Length: 516
Image (cartoon, rainbow, N blue to C red; front, side):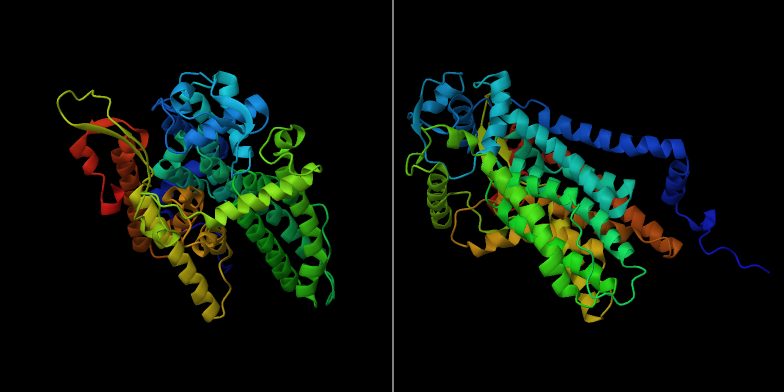
């Protein structure tokens, strides 16, 4: 008697309700195709609504918008950041730009993020608060789509990708940093775009190496792959990230190292005798030349306004504009490493996982509550459930990797990727314990925490090979978690968007002493 095919699906009675529903939906080819574009469209639309609704509120320069929005307009008007007269903020929000002078202003961040903010003001007017926030909000919305695409590439699962997109769409830190004209939301977009492009390069190049060596007996050297367009594109994206904030350089270095390591492991699996040297000295050099010059050129191009004009700060320090730019960068670096000015919302990097001190980027009271005491607050508190669960999930993935290494079993490749993103966006800040930094810098970590969380939720839901009862319990737990995350976001949304609420209602959102 012929044995049954091992790849036949399990009988219906061994599937949970959710698995039967999923199979019924995904079993329809036409509906599956529709779902491929409908799921990201709906999630991106939700992210857009949460980020764009009442975007002009508050109609003032909130927190560091006083620097970036005004610098953005100066770039639009002059090509470089000009100095503003004292008290310029009040005039600025009315559209009066007369306080801007043509004297170069000393700034300590590259110009790309401010050029992006300037696009909104160029289109809709400088005095319009929605105008200088609109580009940031659109990129914040696009970041949600990117996390969906990254998860799809990693897991090939529409369900996992949809959960990842949903979690980032409703997260408070991501919402706030998409609704305020600061640089960190823009940085997050380019970092995640670079990550996606690196994954696409790996999906193409790694199988190519292994297939080219499949029929080769004991090769000494592997092939050197020069045609890696995704890697060049990743260099451009990460060069753009560095042109928003210099912390993008750590991401470029970390992702570049990851490319070399994965190339080395692919050669090892293919049986290349000299696989470490092959990956570093041969393919590694080519990968460097594909990625780093593209990033450097992208970064340099963003300084074009400063280079082609004469009024920028320190522009005349040397007859050679590139030498003058280098000297300016040395001064900027000295500022960054020496910044230790006290601030009531400063939060050291070691505090970030514990969420001890989020930033209130704006507070006010429009008096709409009458005699009752009300308050309006925009706070960068993430969705606490998503944040703490994401941190726990990252620790879980780290534990699984360490256990695999100790037991000399293969490390699950997917578990490495979120930790790679967290390493390059978080660990560098630990080396500057005295520098004045803020909790909202973690917005660039948030997509990778979500990725870690989604992988952990998949493990919680259970594999098809697990007993039916185990999968039922796991899937119900995941559903309860998602419902709770949505409800908590609904509860916190007023303090993420500056709605005027009773003072006691606001106090109910301050779960830790440092959240006030």
